[in-house]
Amino acid sequence: MLLAIDTGNTNTVFAVFDDSGAIRGEWRSSTNINRTADEIGVWLRQLMSLAGIEPKAIEAVIISSVVPATLFSLRLLSRRYFACQAQVVGSPDVDIGIEVRVERPEEVGADRLVNAVGAHGEYGGPLIIIDFGTATTFDVIDGDGAYLGGVIAPGVNLSLEALHTASAQLPRVAIGRPERVIGRNTVQAMRSGIFWGYIGMIEGMVARIRQEYGAHLDVIATGGLAPLFTECTATIPRSDADLTLKGLLAVHRLNAKR
Image 1 (tube, rainbow, N blue to C red):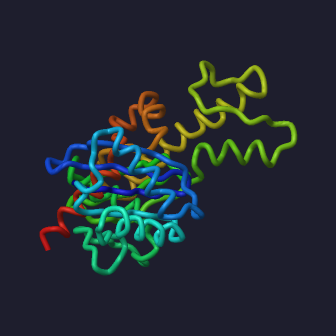
Image 2 (cartoon, rainbow, N blue to C red):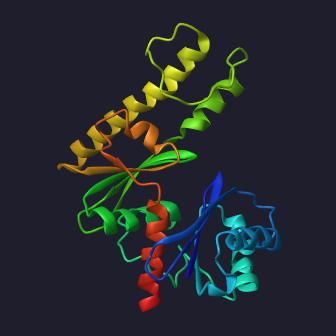
């Protein structure tokens, strides 16, 4: 079995794949650079036990992290609790199997590269991947799977928090689809601005990327808020919550063959 770990700025996802590539268990925790390998190990082994997964069945670990400070604990977790030397996406000895055709490949987040691998393997290309995370990213994948670059915008929840923090009279509100575009009170106006504003950004950004690329690109969305936006615009025909995990599985299998 494979333990895949995807560490984002807000949350960390742990998933166990069996030999067929099916997900046997998946758990999410907040990302905390102060959590030790032992704290993570005790928590994770308990959850695995509840799912009927024996820790000794883990034969490999792969990590994608955009928070470098977490890597020490995650590497130690892999060695101490699963007797594995973890593969870390972005390390020189880990081949992701696609070209990164940007000016500074080392600056591209591991999650964006893993998404590219997962999306190309599952849906082909060319593609635009929209990831609704701490930031909302648009990544462009060529027909041969090469990563061409993309766009980084503030995430939905980050924008909501900024409105509340920077404005004395604006409350903290939850994201959701408003019934009306024109808000009749402050909360309605804020929810409309965030939700329909992001829909407008998505539609406009995809159109501009397609125009600049010079051909049609399919669109796939991922991230926690992807289903909410997917159902409200024809620009996003589908979402895939497990895209990053699929990419980690593909990268592991590629390097296992080596």
